Amino acid sequence: MPVASTGGVDALQQAGYAVDLQGSVEDTAAFLVRDNRPLPPVEALAAVPAATRTDAEAALRATTVFAFVAGELAAAAAPSAVPLGPAPGGVYLAAPAGSPIEEIHLPGAKPGHTERLLPDPGLLARPAGAPPAGFVEAFEDTAPSPQTIAAVRAAVTAEVLGRHVARISGIRPLEEDGALKVRSRDAAASDNALVVEALARRFEGLGLAVRLHPFRWRDHRLLNVEAEHSVPGADSTVLITAHLDSTAANGSFVDAFGDPRPYDPAVDPAPGADDDGSGTAAVMAAAECLRAILDSNRSDRMPTRNVRFVLFNAEEQGLVGSKYYARAAAAAGEDIAGVFQMDMIAGRQPGSTPIVEIHAGSLVSGPVVSASDALGERVARAVPVIDPEAKVQQLTGLDDPAAGRSDHASFHERGWAAVAVSEDLFSTPDGDPGTGTRQYHTPGDTLVDQDHDTEFAATVARSVIAAALTFAGL
Ligand SMILES: [Zn+2]
Image (cartoon, rainbow, N blue to C red; front, side, top):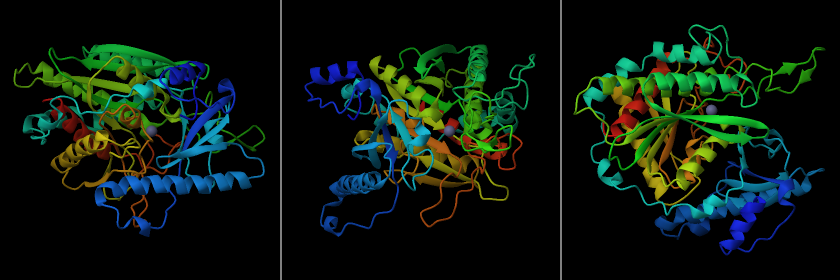
């Protein structure tokens, strides 16, 4: 573990680990920087049996990348960070505690490839990772029923999604009878808390049990929003999730003199209509869909697992909210059967083929890998039922460019099955560029942008929600 709080150091020592402090724990922050540069195939591994080759290759790759990065940092004139060791898909770095995450990057690394690591002795107690009871049997019948498809088509429409996005991204007032239009949902923006309140009220209006999960990030007190329909006697819970915060850190901003200045999250607009207003809208529509199914009052149309809708905060700051959430859920001994995260599902450049990306890749190995793949497979099978024109890209393993990069990763860390579903964000292995939004993390990520396609968002949302509700027993 490259970094720990004082309490974490105590916990590590009590757990029998030798702790070698490399600096004052209060002064140091640790980061994981992913590094996707291509490496040549390793001939020495050709003779290794296939079953163990993937792990061996990953270990070798991590060591090689670490050597590159250590060399690059050593050659830098004023090194900003100290390499600590190889990590799955990248490298661990230490930097001064106050270092903004934007400043921790490697030459050639893409934005968003850096993750701030939270000191978390709880990870030492990660469950063994056995799939929840009933998990394997539940996979026998994975196709959504015609009734579930019909319910999803009725409740999750382009119009419904567009209306939710309009409210939380400043196109329309946040509240029906109010005047406030949201300027930014950035974790550091004052509107963030108002959006939390408004979304919590909407969940309450649907008759769901709403809980707000507070956590601290820098000097802000933030909230994750959770709404649950619980089923008496259920053995586990299915999560349908997205992140409610936004950022415009990639935008260009100028000061009063017309000179470039950095993004100011407290005042600059960050509408985040696609990232992740689209996923947030889909979670709200999923809750409305479940309400409609429950209201149909048919005894054969009741879920067998608890269904929970969660909107995470401060995802853009390094998955902060979901890490707190998953940690608390693990500490409470919860049984989470699967997590369906939707992050950026409305981006589609005009005229391009609709492509749904399903990310099951995990930086954590073990049973979580195949369990997450199985969730991804469920979504992949739902897509052609919803829209035969849509194409599916299933990504998994350490080659999944989204491994570790959205809130689903916080659940992988606890051994829980999780996928993130998105628009076509990443280029294909043969170099075709993604067809998703060109307004990633800019003030131009609005509902009226030409790359924001609510029909496409409805295809993605319906597929994910149909798969998730089926997994919950509907
Ligand atoms: Zn996002």
